[in-house]
Structure formats: structure tokens, C-alpha cells
Length: 111
Length: 116
Image 1 (cartoon, rainbow over the protein chains, first blue to last red):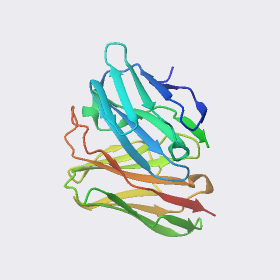
Image 2 (tube, helix red, strand yellow):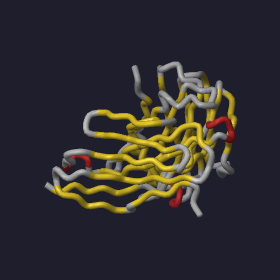
Image 3 (cartoon, rainbow over the protein chains, first blue to last red):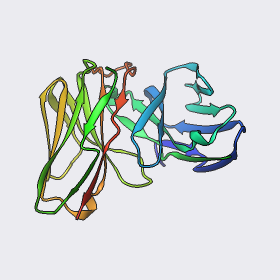
Image 4 (cartoon, each protein chain N blue to C red):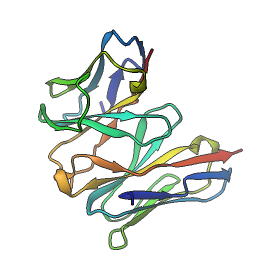
């Protein structure tokens, strides 16, 4: 069993739809990150969470530490949101120096 | 400056070549990382430098040689690579110190390496 799992693996949505991507993890963490990677591109950190909820523009991220679960929501999705969204956790071990990455969710938003 | 800058963006090299990838940040971060990412896979950690000292080497072959000349610069020296080493190489930095600190973890845009 992978330490970090995401669902769905692939997601196609119509422009304007509300999107949810889920992440569950099995290790103790110091922080959870949501990352965005466009095709062939580098990685952008969207959120870092250790508790609760954060909002930035049309993006909302939540985390439930007790349930070891996090969600990334995109409201009013747009084709430019098409990317791979990666959940990554910083383990409490090894002083949280490195990430454990989820497999990613490939999102395509159609016009 | 809140960026991690990687150069070159693209590199094609032969199996007998020696080349270097460069990563630079001026955010005062004291931890820097090299990741390797194959197509449609999450990044895999290669090396971590903490306060300019190599703290993690994830059993990377010796044909990859990291170097951290100062706190702002991280190099990855490449020699005698194989075609299967073709990948996107990502650099990242963070404030350092680990623990609950996660803010400021920043990735570069990567170097796409092709070994022919």
C-alpha cells in the first residue's frame, strides 16, 4: 500500500464545473502540500497545510489530520486549470526534510 | 526574489559527455534538493543538501554527482549517463531545519534531459 494515495487518477470536467481531488495518507506528517504541474513543466506549490482549510482564489484545500485525508477543490474550473495535481506529505520522520509524493491526479478541463 | 532558477531548461547529451545542471535561489533557504521525474510519474528524491552539507543520498548512481558550492547554488554533475537517465530534473529549496516548517518550499521549473 502506497503511503500517499490520490483519487481520482484522471479527471475530465467541463469548464465551470466544481472539482474535488482527494488525498489520503498513512504516515504521520508535519505538513501536506498540494502541488500543480503543467505538462512538461515545473512544479508549483499551491498550498501547505498542517490543519484546517486554506483558500486562494478559486482553489480551496482542506485537511483532516485525524482521518489522514485532504481535499483540493477548484471552483468554476477553467481550461487553464488542466494540469497534474500532486499531493505530497512531509513525514515527521527524517525531520520532514523530504516529501512522499502521491501518484498525481491528471485533470483536463474542456471548454 | 522568490524563485528557484534552473539552467539549462533543456539538455541533450551523449553517453560519453560530461555536463552540469545548475540550480540557484536567493531566498536564504538552507536546504536544497534534487529530484528526478520520469514521464507520468511523481518526482523521486535524489539528494538533499542541508546547510551546504549532503544529508541525504537516495542510493543514486555515481554517474550523478551533486555539489553545493555555497548556500545559494546547487549543481548536479553528469557523466557517462545512460538513455534511461533521460528525465526532468527538478531542483527545490526550503528554509531548512525540517520539523513543522513547510512554508517556502519552492520548486524550480526543471531541466529536461535527453541522453542519446
